[in-house]
Amino acid sequence: MDQIGVNTMRSVQKLIKSAIKTRVLTAFPNLPQNNFEIQLETISNNLNYEYKTPTVIRIFNQFKKQNLFGDLKSEVEVAQKIASTECQDNVIQKVEAIEKGYLTIQLNNQFIEDEINAILINGLKFPLEKKQKVVVDFSSPNIAKEMHVGHLRSTILGESLCRILEFQGQEVVRVNHIGDWGTQFGMLINHLLEEYPDYQTNRPALKELEDLYKEAKKKFDSNEEFKVKSQQYVVKLQALDPVCIDAWKMICELSRQEYNKIYQRLNVKITEYGESYYNPILPEIVKECEAKGIVELDKGAKIIRVKGEKEVPLMIVKSDGGYNYDTTDMAAAKTRILEWKCDRLLYLTDVGQSSHFKLIFEGAKLMGWHQPPITSMEHMGFGLVLGPDGKKFKTRSGDTVKLIDLLDQAKERALKQIKQRVQENQQGKEFATGTALSPEEFDTAAERMGIAAIKYYDLKQSRISDYNFDYDKMLDPKGNTAVYLMYSYVRMLSILRKSGIQDFEVYKTENKFKITHPHERHLATQLLRFVDVLQSVTDQLAINWLCDYIYDICVKIAEAYNQYRILNDEHTQTRLLLCEAIRMVLLQSFYLVGIEPIEKI
Image (cartoon, rainbow, N blue to C red; front, side):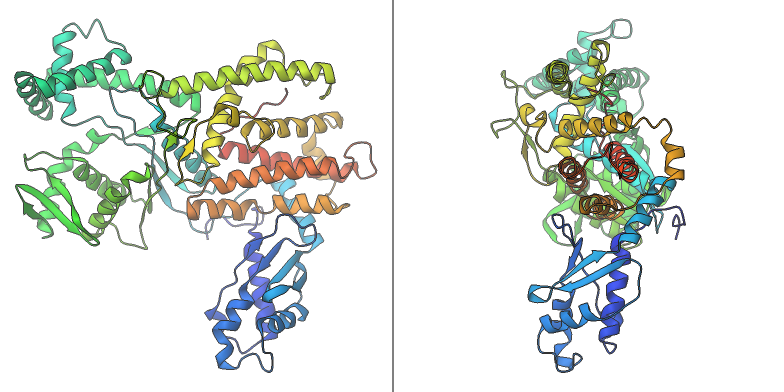
């Protein structure tokens, strides 16, 4: 137990599961308590009940042959007995048996109020039970190439996952496994020295470098003399020849400067551990695998056959004696587990690489580095980003879409929408005086909204599914979009400003939240799901569940405006406290999915 204390939030689901299990065992004391678990499902659109459980159905089917339920003949009768069993706990107000043996659960009002007041006073602190060191391998662009749409999902998903894990209290190592080594550098250096012999004083731009790469590849495939010379440069580079190393460093630094501009705009923090980082230990890795007795020779190549993968082996040395991705990834696995002492290794790439990572994980297991369940290696695969037409995302000229162009276009469209929205607000006076953006603030707001629109639209998708990149849908102010969420947040801030309260920190300590309306209760219980949602997100690597949670809160806020008055009402005090709790949860959730909010519009 590492981070659980009196000031941390609590997992409501754990409390409910414990209380329901107590009820089940009170009703049927002969049931073996360690032989069943309580399953919970949330109920999102019912003002009276928050959770339901199918556990009775499972218990009945599991134990009915052991005659542990007396004269009760069905799961419905068993559920009714459990629901009517009296138990003292401060979490559950009421349990009711419904159709097919399900139980519905209503939380205790005092419990809800106490938890909301604890959030207001203590803030949002995650109750971490087991601290781990987690490496998250994400983004991973290739040197000498501009970042493109193919890097979007890994970068956005990886950053959000790191933020969530860090908020939970885990020690996170953010790794950028860039493609900065390999045979392609031989032809690139060869061509660079031919075209830019004065590259040290006349550096090419990254776009020129990418063109050089394409030209070098064409010459490599068509010109035998160039090919041989390029292969010689590979040998020189691996031998740390000063000229080759100098050219290689220039190429890497030029690339790094460009993709760092992208990271800055996306607010991504990541540390570079490229393929070259592991290059010095590759011979040692091969020898270690051979000493383990798991290496076979196959047509000159050194391979490892792993469990479940009969056709495609792990290749640690190619037939020409060179190393490849398999060798580097095996070296990375050993380094991260044994040297960095990481407990959980997460790799974010498209689903097309899942078979490759299966080989690496099994290879690391054969070597004894990876020892489940002590260590965990997981591939967080994701689907592709397609064009609006559902086809491969290309420019009109057929080129790969550059990531920088996507961000610029999103900002431009967001700026147009903001100007239009401000004009409408001035006419309709939607927000209070002093909350409208000034023209000087348009650019920053557009950057935030455009970037947020792209991030959220990506994160809300089912991770393994492909999706169509569509600006109109991303920037829709009425759908499940970052724009809708940001407007909802601005409206909440507007209410808090209009309240006239100068210091909410003092206000929170002097007043207590008290439920005065069924919908207040409904909103409050949604906030209390925060811990359980985040736990499920990192357990199942499903960030879209957090997006669903944020959207549900914002939808319920909109519903609340139609249910009751917040300002100038006898219950204004408690409703402002609920608004403040909502603001706190939304602001933290926004950060976790990479949304930088705007505070006026």
